[in-house]
Image 1 (cartoon, rainbow, N blue to C red):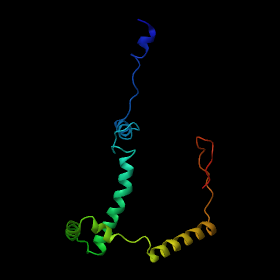
Image 2: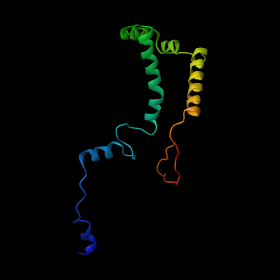
Image 3: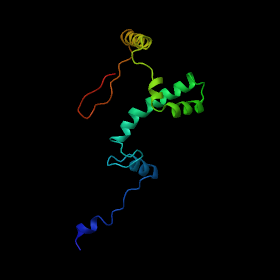
Image 4: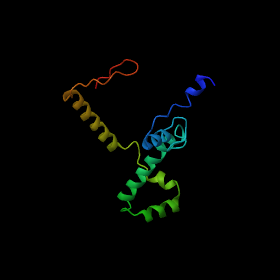
Length: 131
């Protein structure tokens, strides 16, 4: 036998902790992992489901007094149209006033109450982000 063929057989594998093995298996970029279809179905799920869930929870607490059976009865009676009926309007002037005031306050804080400059570590492209 040649020395090259024996070289790889006698080399022990480095010990990896069980937590590291689980982490590597869970977030494998080749697929699988904790979220199946995480390149297409996972992001789509996160874009569509949480806003609907939040609106339903807000409506349940605000308009139905926290009654989940009442929410279920309304959803059963009216179907998906019920979600459309309770969905807040994006053209509500009060909502835009709140958003505008928040933006103004944040811009004023950024301009007149600056924080200490922080230089991050160099990126792979050689840039140094300044925060």
